[in-house]
Amino acid sequence: METNKPFLFLLFLAVSAVLADEDVFIGVNIGTELSDMPHPTQVVALLKAQQIRHVRLFNADRGMLLALANTGIKVAVSVPNEQILGVGQSNTTAANWVTQNVISHYPATNITTICVGSEVLSALPNAAPILVNALKFIHSALLASNLDRQIKVSTPLASTIILDSFPPSQAFFNHTVKPVLIPLLKFLQSTNSYFMLNVYPYYDYMQSNGVIPLDYALFKPLAANKEAVDSNTLLHYTNVFDAMIDAAYFAMLDVNFTNIPVMVTESGWPSMGESNEPDATVDNANTYNSNLIKHVLNKTGTPKHPGIAVSTYIYELYNEDVKAGPLSEKNWGLFSNNGTPVYILRLTESGSLFANNTSNQTYCVAKEGADTKMLQAGLDWACGTGKVNCAPLMQGGPCYDPDNVAAHATYAFDAYYHMMGKAPGTCDFTGVATITTTNPSHGTCLFSSTGKNGTFLNGTAPAMDSTSSSAYPVWYYNVFSTTLMMILGTLGLSLVLL
Image 1 (tube, rainbow, N blue to C red):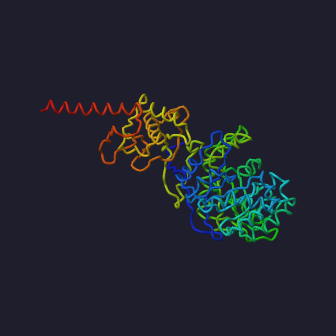
Image 2 (image 1 turned 45 degrees about the horizontal axis):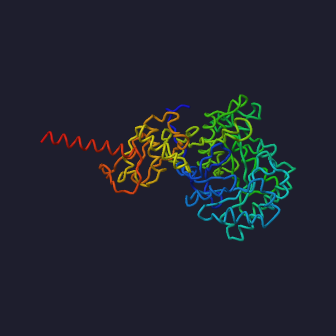
Image 3 (image 1 turned 90 degrees about the vertical axis):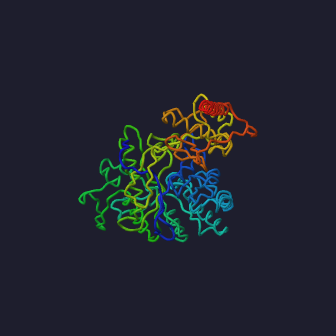
């Protein structure tokens, strides 16, 4: 990947209002099929560092919901497919689900949406007959708690339920799912909710056998004579994404629904694939997601609804290395599990986004929940054999507080990591350290991406209080001895001068 271009790091901000009372936004999906899933607090730290303000969970994980509390991040929780049958067949089960997974966390955790299942009509057809009941039961539970206005209920659908999608004006829903879709659309209309759609131009491009140009799938500029034209409406389409959104609008129009807004619950591009997936590359993934973000936040809208932006969740935050399927299925993420970016999004033309290139700003920190004895051993090694200057950790130093092994280990691990030039393997410490892009600075303890951590703000050395109740490790006495020798040397030089 080239690094000499003016890339900007991943930052998201909601902009001006469209469609009812919601702001258009870019959010991210958070999948969990990772061999080493980051702790919820690490996930949230990454979200905050990247100013990601909207997330969609594929479940209602308690740990994630607690970690998201009091962050202001807007959360879409999900009823997993395996729970649809129970929720759709029992009002009581649905009410209990809402109590346990929504009411117990709201409003500290800013839950705004409940996604009932994921692509149920295509992935779990046996649950299709009770899907609308499941939505209604969930909504009734919200209504009983007076939360029906604050929290929307819908279900993400696969775009494959829309047939004959180009030209968009000819699109219609698969007749086999209409017995479910008509009641679903009535529910969405009556509750002012969204028609949720998963939109993947990558798959349309792959399955088109060369009919769809790659540039058209990636939002790249096209010459006027290369644009796709709907022969019925004479609307010009410059990208697959807009054509798929308008196909959804026209399919709803075909069954007499005209005022239900579309929300894209999944869209993205894989950064790696099998030999038969040559266009699953880092550059194409970067191009698609960068252009998608700009397209949504610039409020371009679609040819059928210009100026009406479609809020979209990017698929996804992390690469999911244990996800079933081909190599591409494991590589849709913006980040690896240690928080380092797979690529740096090109957002130079998105004026509403902050410009903050942090592509080289990585830090080595103690893993959440790591064994205290292992952390202490790593700390002792870094400050001893590792030759890290751990003076800032002594009492009175800028990094003394909080006085616990995890915080002190983070300081020492990061200092060693940077001292060694961030070389591979220098942030491990027998498995209790991990790399992050989130700056661990706190209070007077300032971490630097150059490794010059723990600068004394007032320029004075820390006080060494031998009466402190803290149990100092070996490295403390090494630092103490070195400091003492420096003091004695200075005194000796003074005596000679006298």
